[in-house]
Image (cartoon, rainbow, N blue to C red; front, side, top):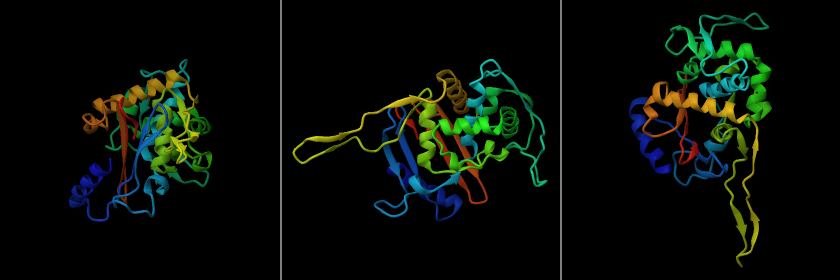
Length: 265
């Protein structure tokens, strides 16, 4: 993982300017074992580890939690449920007004739930989140592994105003991609003495945090994102599912990819 990152950064700097950095975490989705971690572009640098310590607004990566919350209510929502992609205005407690827009500034009227996630549409996501309730979506995020202290319970959280590190995002998607079973991320397999005696061995344990069916349906919609949504260009790299997000004014690109062979990246 380090070599592809080091190779790609100089290519991006030609179009985006100097000073780019990178971080990545690759996790076995079944066991939570960290297979690889990149803390920055400088090989051997022992300072700031961006994979563990660089918190950034996660943007659209929060959206699966919104749709998962809905799909946990099969009597009310399924992948074909109709969501409204029409203008919405929200007023804050201090009178401030928020009018979320889609990335292309267009409205599509009614869209199926799976398409709203696959195409990462902001407006139907906010509408759905408001219908579900901020508290319910916050609870889902906590069950996926997000620290409750990281969550600011305001409508903008539906579009990822909360900031997480790559490590925290990897934990979140490990739970989702493992059929709702959470295994704590770990980079330690065992501790062995010089004589060969094992004094510690990590035994993967996973707990069911969200319903299996709801997790599977959410991941299926993410798979559609690779086939026809915002992650189309990742189709050749991740055989299963992916989401990406760009944030400005300081451009940050965040990608979560799920593959059968590896897991959450």
